[in-house]
Image 1: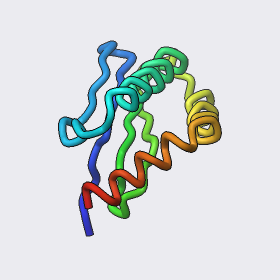
Image 2 (image 1 turned 120 degrees about the horizontal axis):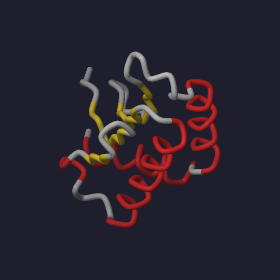
Image 3 (image 1 turned 90 degrees about the horizontal axis):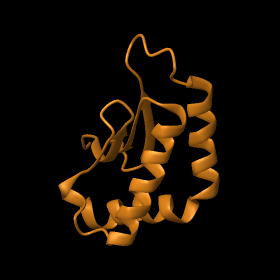
Image 4 (image 1 turned 135 degrees about the horizontal axis):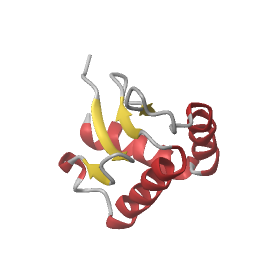
Length: 104
């Protein structure tokens, strides 16, 4: 069993985007698309978004927010994750396949 690995994260609080250096091999266009997707997500609903490979190598969206952040849209975050899963299946599938083939 493996441990979880963070692919990337964006924070509405720090106005920052992070991509794990382990994934430097991903094409720049994919990194750019991830950055746009994650930053727009946090601009829209607030909080923090992480894309994480779980122990099974599956890519998951994880959202969190600071306690006392009354502007965070919890319902909107769930809907936005579902929207991204529906509108970006090629990107998400290719990232999962990349991880399973290259990183495992």
